[in-house]
Image: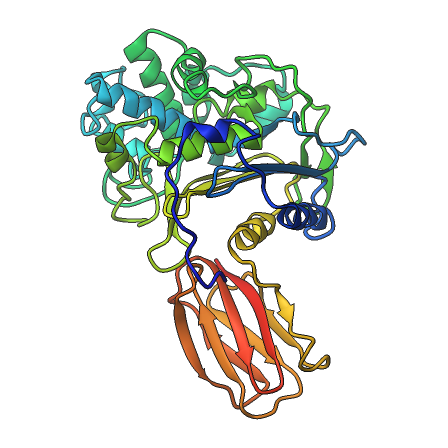
Length: 451
């Protein structure tokens, strides 16, 4: 990982202008190669990304197509999935700033009681998923209803009626469980308080505020940009199929308030960068939003927070809607923003992680060929959860292993006796790390991801 922290720069209005500064050519090529590699491993059909560097220079890139031969371009839009929640939570916090909503008041202060939603459930508990409300996506007939009625626009009332037929998983405020239903209800609360449809509230108070020129509330606002396509596994999860031509009205409308945003990486990057850097909400509102709930320790009010190294937090949200995947995050201390959007369900976090690592780490990943061409280093599994295998060949018997966090802090260092090693990483925070094997024969560096 990067040996020295990047100098932190204040966010200015300049990042809206592509011409303020330019990402170095070699880094642009590296970023593009990462996207190109994603088409092979894990084998996504199409991918689009945006990186806003600490100096506010912007890079965007694409690779692949929509599954039907139409190339992904810088104007192609994707379904942002659960990144929608951060937009909805932002509107809730604006209403809180205006004194129109109390986060610790029960939802029944704003709308009528909903069947199977306990009246003591508060706004905050819905925002941070400690409400225990049943997730309508888990209903036995939820997917079948979408497939059998693909052109139907489901209203929130219909969602509650047809799919919210189970009681709370647990008493409100006693545990954490992610539930899309929370944000469908929050959307109806926004409408009740303002008297306006949710999509108009988001358009007038969030999208236009930034502004976001290629972002829409799916099923409620039309868009003319090319769509990325949608590849998802069939019901037995054995075959990836092209669902691009399948009508998406039911898919988007059942995701009302929780996953129906249509957008592209640059817009999401501008949004999350401006939000986390304090340019949309007040300091007090952001303090509330970034307060992680006591049960998950990484989910606040419509936003997730992770540590990618010692005292280096990043905030944002990921998203999945059928076969579209999104990763939208910003590192405030590094002033770095990365958004990746993919169009097939067999995508994963790797391209996002590679872009992050490349943006921070100027070290050429691999082996120092000046010392020994036969020296090799491998780490697996990668990503790893609890245990990491570190293998290197042609041991001289005096190797030193070092593991660094993303900000260059040395976490672990000790001599290695064998060429094959297993280390316990169960206590490591999620994120990116660098493992380095040094000896008098070589100096090899590889990265790994802890998930």
